[in-house]
Image 1 (spheres, rainbow, N blue to C red):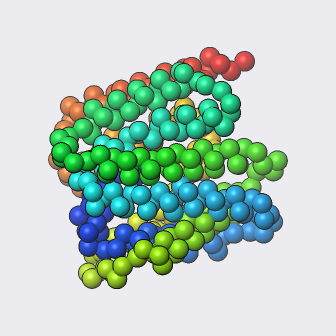
Image 2: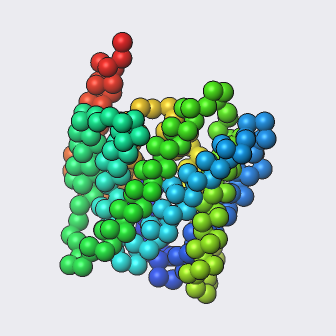
Length: 276
């Protein structure tokens, strides 16, 4: 998720629109986009339930943590605390494989350092709870990516992602409906801009964005997947700079981006050397 999306949530939704309603809207719109593409030929009950569980964790529960964090932290603090996801991906992937890959962990940590060089800003004095909430979101996001990658790798006949991905969003929608019913408040969007942002975040960022991201996760190794979670940060800043003309510290961007690219290079070099 780019810095521009973070800013949209922080400026227009956080504290103004009920976070559970925002999550419900996003997951509903994402499901609405992909449910028509479901195909029974590629789905069985076991696969459908597994996809729903992955979507419930990676999107549904993650969004609940994520939106709550904006009530506890400033936007820059949320941004800096999201950079630890590569470490969780590496550790979870190794745990599933019953192994430990120190080199992948090293490159993941290197990508975290690169992202920190770009994102670090002054922190408020009371941020511990917010930090823990963001880590909850990071862990859910990491588990979902690895689980989706592993699930698709185990299929004897590879299904088209488009034909099954609606189940992913359906799982997220079920979590968001339940959480809104239990904890939601009557704080709904009052301005067309807020509705427009929710529509974009639902159909675009949540719908198409997660489809492309998870599909890409199945095409790369675990180390590259971990690093690319932080490679989004310089990419998002470049987009903001070129399209939205936002102020960006070019020195921090180039330095941190260079470290992330170095971590990706080292990861790919190590992966190639491991192949027979």
